[in-house]
Image (cartoon, rainbow, N blue to C red; front, top):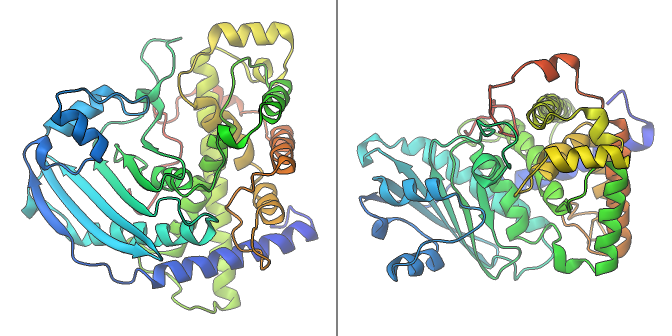
Length: 414
């Protein structure tokens, strides 16, 4: 952290020590998980499904939701496979974790790998629960992970509206008492699960947390930063930046078997330094990838970086004509890219502004007070100004072809 001032470096040390302690605690609670229930699936009636979807199917209705593409739904409902279910408790919360693999039989299942997945998910649930201020959020939680091979890709036809089939992988309700998380692609499944967990445990904010004046003010400030006209769900950026950071933290903390690399509650200074450097190197790699994907988005929309980031009325008209989305691509790709290039600023902001406990625990829980909303937009503006323009080679070349994935494919658990 040689490129940051002493104050920021000191706060980052505290952030990482808190994260390490929380990760150690979370993994220690998940050293063993109960043996799973394993069953073949040869029809949708045997498939683990959220109850509302099962009721709809049983009554002959189609599943209607904005964030679950029809093609992937049909695949999940019609392809044979194997379902593996784990159950565990997270404090007072009850969690059922359902993995479904397709076009395999029971004998082909890699149960050792599934156990590692389950331990990692268990640790994640403990981690986010430690930071969540509302115990009622997801007090009964079902997690459905459908390991399909569908990839997130830009549309083949230039100028087509970006939608859920191109950019989304999961869904969850914000802080529902009886909640479901659905992840429907194998690609980036763990990172997406982190993102959806922030919704499910109420760690982010949503529209009803904002008065009309506050929301209008945030959107207005955003439109002074970028030449956009459409509203942006800024809370999606908050969930996404934490998902990418924690995805790296999990990679650095535990090996491919979900065993902590340094299994000591009190970490030695040299081991802590290795952990910090691993996380910061991983975040830097992710920042570079996010910039490549941002450049790809600009190229797809036929918009220059200057046009998007200089909010004149002329540029706003260009963006309005050329850029169309029915999902949260701008929040995932443009705003998160800016934050990824200033991770110190983001994490220190969370350390200063979020904790609801006197010992500075709970830095992931966004405090829904008016000053925090305004401060978060100012943070986004600060990070946008510091974010480098996409390098020329990124604007001319394809990175992973038409992929719209949001993290580089180097994780231990994908």
